[in-house]
Image 1: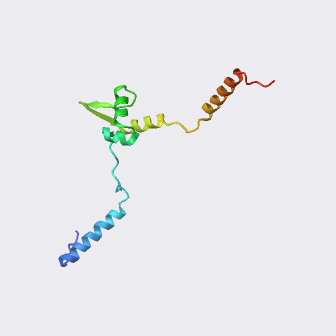
Image 2 (image 1 turned 30 degrees about the horizontal axis):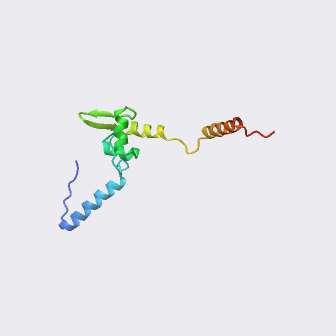
Image 3 (image 1 turned 135 degrees about the horizontal axis):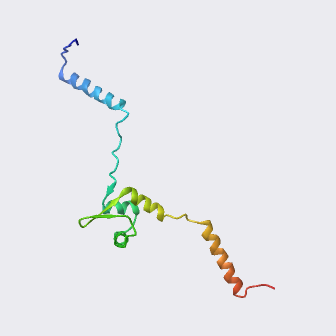
Length: 119
């Protein structure tokens, strides 16, 4: 059988004890999330922030089904993961070595055809 112990403390001391206990529990709780994860569903304004597009460009892409989206009534709803994947697929390297090589080769070929040959 458990023993019950009664302690008489002034209210200020009791509050301090409780606050210290709660803070200690929170520090020791490894599963306590520091920030809540964002929901997977996002609004038009969230999509603007994620993509960096203008309102008109985003509306144009949704009307032509070039960007992943859904409709809820007359509202546009986006899936955050799909939108981030779409943005990543639209991103190209600043200097794509293959396309640079093709451009240089085309330029050289056109100069050769233009009569710039030295005999």
